[in-house]
Length: 477
Image 1: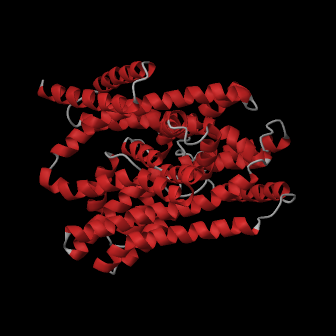
Image 2: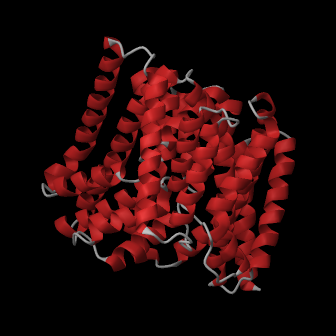
Image 3: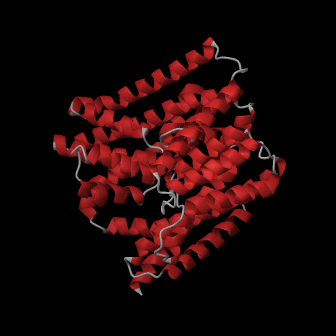
């Protein structure tokens, strides 16, 4: 249990770049270093987490914990992964007013080193994916095609931003739309890409992406409705064809699902109790927090729009506070955006309503609990369903393709991380070439340290040290 908690805390503390960026880090720490799970078990967790709403790394951590230490491990793994981001967000909300922008500036400098470390890990994950694909159906060529296709559809807008191109991307679709298309193609084909089902699903997928793309090349509500309706019907038909001969759930499996849901409800109530005592009206925040977590498909950027609708439009917090304070702090800290933002909103609302820091901390804890419980309860049910039917052709194909899909998304994540650092440092007079040079220096050092088998903690500390010293020296000069 101690190894599990320390591993998840460590990953949570360096969790810059969002949920997808942490998958390679989890592979490195939980699979290669600590041997908590196998690569196949991690991949199945990624599949289940990718098709459910909520905080992806927290959900995967819950699955790792359950595999190793049962129900207690599930709570410990998820909480340890979510805690650093939520805790740091709350602390920063408290102390930002005392230290002004100085602390934020140093965190921005440190993020360059962490970003360099994360990008190195992302590149290693992609390389491993291509090597691993040799043993899967379709091989390395199929994996490379999937990686490039996902990158093209998802990362086009980020490339435009990097190159300073002002044109509207043709696609630039979100992560959740990528997974919708991937799920649709996999369900229709069951991994057989030489059938008529592949041709049909491919044509419909391209039309769907052209409808959803930033440029809206197909701008017809009728075509959009027909396409989406046809996709839904085909998914239902193919699922019925594949499930009709499968065994049903046993009583023990239904009991396991109910037990997990009740356990997470108990976790939620226990951690929300202080908020309910000091601020009874926080029941409204908790309800909205749970709803926002259940609506949080598509990653951190998509969650911000959900949060705006539920918390800003309802008058719980102002737009200035949300974007000017909470989102700014959340973006420069590690961890899940969902957990950080809900904790930040909780602290802001709680401190305002009770007039005390303690009240803010209690409601921030309720935000942390809402994000964790909602994410993991849904994930737990989906994971049980997936484990029961994972030998079906659909799920075996999904398991084969999830790594290439994630790898394609990770290229976009790496570009986005670099863009973010360039934007931050531009305010201090940096040129993007200076940021790139510092990252290359740090990345080269990290690769050298990895070859010498120097522990990950020292790699991260070296990255932090060089970025802090380099940035501060640059500004002095």
